[in-house]
Length: 214
Image (cartoon, rainbow, N blue to C red; front, side):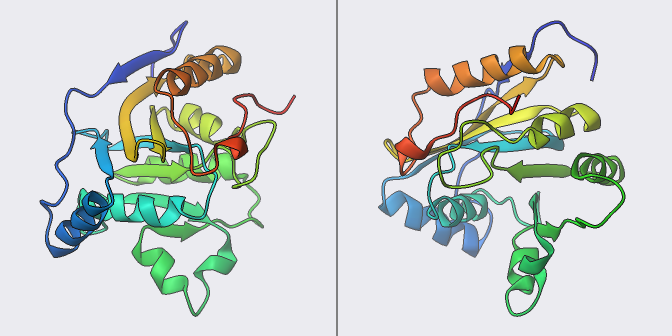
């Protein structure tokens, strides 16, 4: 990623078509369509990127996001999305499930921090689309966790701006931001994007504020 003086924002010219990637894809697309959901996910998606999902305000985000992932064929067999979680999630009895849907445990006892661990993983994987929620919790927070931003900078990959819009039942991931390295400038651009598309979560009062902890 070359040094830039302002974030570069690119919108994908096309969206993936749900339901074209096998039986699970068809069933997931059917379920979402029956409930009025639209999936607007870029085609193509960069092989390596950090995908943020905002706002994260409800437990419903995970099943809706998982169904959308299946509907558009982003499975381990095809073009997987991945996410990190606490080691306890990957223990029996449910560890197999979280691994099957793209999860991997984070070693919190490692001498290197989370950002360094993720940057190293990006360097060794041929394809890595890493998903996380900047808020880190479903409750309202006065600031975002900065890990998504510094992972993208360290790995030199773009940030895909994803949204769960419950007000209009849309799952959107079709805009990519190359950060300039100035956190204030980059966060302002991200906030502007979400404000412009008028995204509202399941519990909009819980949406976090686009700033990092001082």
